Length: 325
Image (cartoon, rainbow, N blue to C red; front, side):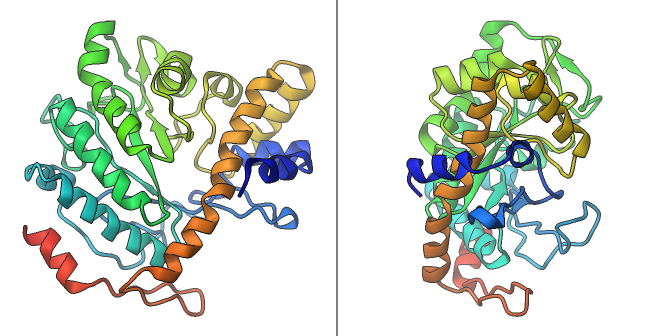
């Protein structure tokens, strides 16, 4: 969809609809505006399998059947970029079959401590290895019209007080160790989304951190997608909008929707900043939809959904090659 078409749609939205577009509608979907042909986006956890919830209106439900690939830590031990690209394409096939628009991965936080509970899904203790391999995975997934969400930005490398800790760090260490992998992945892989972390960095919440989300990610690295929060990472929606956070998840969050409307009406929320967040979410939702439709029609090994129950038959030779290489 062309930019002028997106702008035409935005001009027809009410203030409340605009506020809703930057907050999730359910735990796994964005807000849709059927009267303008604006669809919802469905997201799903990854990154070594598609954990598509059987009920997208609930956080605590079982998942639809999907392939469980070797964890990122194991696949990264191959140092095989081509394998990561192939894995990305296989994951995209599953996303297409299960009706998923954005896969929430890869995760590339640095393995700083063996006590980090998510080390299995992170790639490496080396930022260059993590960046190079994740870029290939991103390219593989997105080659089929499915988006990715590079996470968790940034410096979220421990399990103790993961949701509240402040990572105190000097600029050189931040740049050389903790941001290098993200920089490589953003510039080479061009992920459609980046997910901000729960923690604080030098006292400021990642969801309200303009230095990370705007100055570094967008201005220095040229990121053109949208930033989504980790699930429950937003404390106050207005400063997070001002910092550069485009989409709050999960939804619904009616209190924050009303907070945005009131902030816009009162002048507390700068209109230019507000429109930038809205543009990022809306353009991503509209622009990639035709590409996803083409991918669905051309992907091999897919059994289409029937009666609202997506099913999939992944090529056995590909699965075996990835799992056993």
